[in-house]
Length: 227
Image (tube, rainbow, N blue to C red; front, side, top):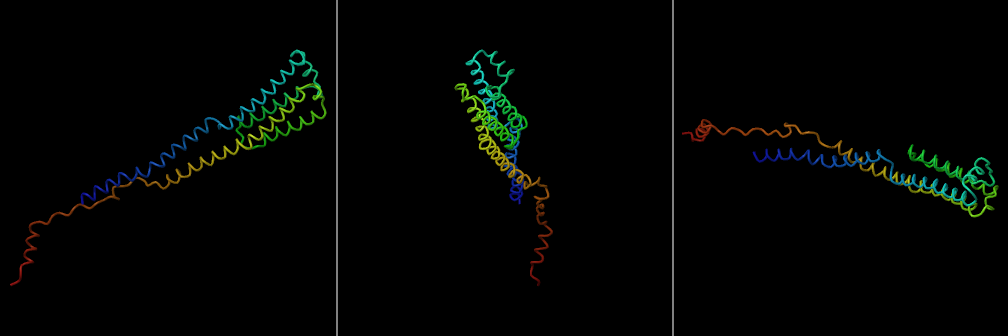
């Protein structure tokens, strides 16, 4: 009886532990993953935002080099900005790069948009503007920068579209699925986890009192043969 009682007490002490270890670990992993997701944007989205910043800086650098090649910066700025000419100025290509940067950073870094419509708008506007400018303007007669700036701006806009559509959005969707696969078992385990066991579930009746001397004598009397 004592062995049975000790085994029941041991099982009572071990059951809550075996049922609570796995859900606790899964819950800890889930909390850490969600906390990391709330603190900052994903790595692949951060890389996309860096590439958008590189797009603006690279177009700006090429435009500054073009200003220096064709004369002084101050004189060329006055000519391209104050006396803007659609057919010969590169200033509008720089404005298009600023437009792409502002829209994409606002949509995918500040608002953390999870849709492709913003980059589709910027790429469509950039492509249409550059195609029309190359056809109607006189950029091709202004040397290497007349070819370089429109082509590079066009390529960078489409690289941003490809990177967001094929890298950022699919990887973030995969991370969400992984988060769901971690959270679902932990929630089911928490629902199935047994509650604290009461003393009544392991109640063991006390041992019966040993037979007294009077009961033993009565048994002997009944066992005596009747004469």
